[in-house]
Length: 248
Ligand SMILES: CC(C)(COP(=O)(O)OP(=O)(O)OC[C@H]1O[C@@H](n2cnc3c(N)ncnc32)[C@H](O)[C@@H]1OP(=O)(O)O)[C@@H](O)C(=O)NCCC(=O)NCCS
Image (cartoon, rainbow, N blue to C red; front, side, top):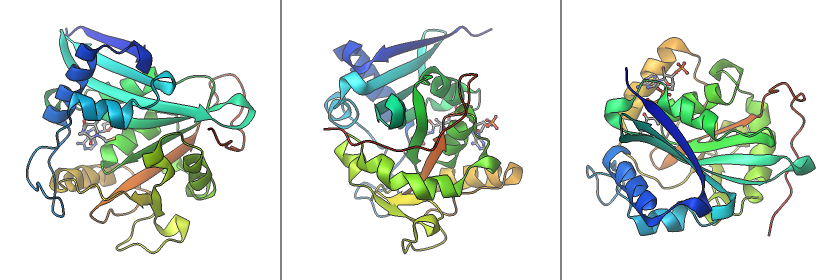
């Protein structure tokens, strides 16, 4: 049986070698650029330097978890936290990737559970990949068919406006829940100008739709789905309304 080891680090603990390995895994496994991208058909790659700039700009507020299976770096997640109401936190998943050979074994869901904290009030994710949304919804305790579009509509803008990450703060929300004109039938998402290859994502979406009522609609090119769920009661207290507080 394979040996799975999950390791969790704060952004401040990451060494140059760990960041280089994280960039290598991302570049090997994330996917390919799609129509609309200058490098259509080519692998989406990131350098260690870009990874630091884009995902580790707030190392103290960032958590990195990785899964090592039989000695191979098989998957990783990065999330950044910022304050919400009552000192409880927003936990935003900024990067999630599992090596292709290790997918569909529950690694993404397990990694997402690794970064959870009892102080979290709300979990969020922007992703063009419906499988990432499914994994996050399940890992964070809200099955796909119980996602509240009203919760997303009410909270997404304020949650993102309070983010210390400029890329998230400036995101352009799109979809019917935000009453924002969007091509196609997107329900909750954002126009991020991220033109990722779509064929695998559409196949995943159809597979997911065979099992679940998919709540977030269809994704126009250059957009990502937006998932936002309240932290579930983990035996401490019931979920409360979320009131974000801006940070410096
Ligand atoms: C998205 C990704 C991280 C999922 O990793 P994974 O380890 O295969 O996911 P898991 O095995 O934990 O599966 C999570 C859920 O998705 C389902 N699932 C996984 N792959 C699926 C697929 N191709 N089609 C349909 N459902 C799928 C699983 O059955 C599971 O559902 P369940 O909770 O009902 O059991 C992985 O596919 C990946 O790295 N993709 C490329 C990078 C990417 O798009 N990242 C997201 C950007 S934030």
